[in-house]
Image 1 (cartoon, one colour):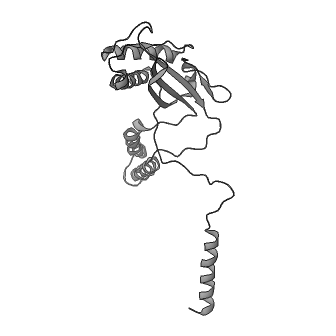
Image 2 (cartoon, one colour):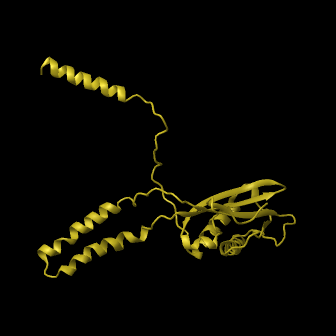
Image 3 (cartoon, one colour):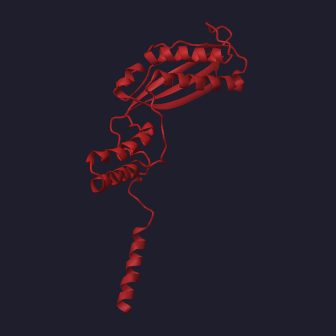
Length: 221
């Protein structure tokens, strides 16, 4: 390699180092690690949440053997009415003392916040979705070359859909944050928050999001 070639290579390497300086006019956008979030779209899912919260309340040492009173929300929605009944039933079933008034009892309240995203960027498909799709297309082409009936090409693709479709669901631009808390003598004893996707058409069951995208619809304490 000639001296001129070496000079060009070394100069290019030195110049690339100049561009590698860790400076920027503004913070660079990055992403979070891939995570999952459940979609709430049935009254059964409200029951699952009620079971989870009842177990957590019963297991909390600060609420051990305390009587509980579940305060009705100030704004009633389909979710608030159903969830209060389900949570009451689950606490009683698990052995809690649930009173019909707050006299001598820790007060359990829950708050629902509807979040509506107005300008969300595209979200990547589920991990493995593109691979499964490509594999289905590749397998489906086999019958055209070896089988007499082209419609048989749909069988492998349908099998892949049946295999994976149960765990696939689309993301939504609307979510809810459901927070359950228990307090006594102005002291917070328990607090738990859960996040779920919801179908846009179901947002009225939880409370409509405001123009700013958020609205608290349940109890105040």
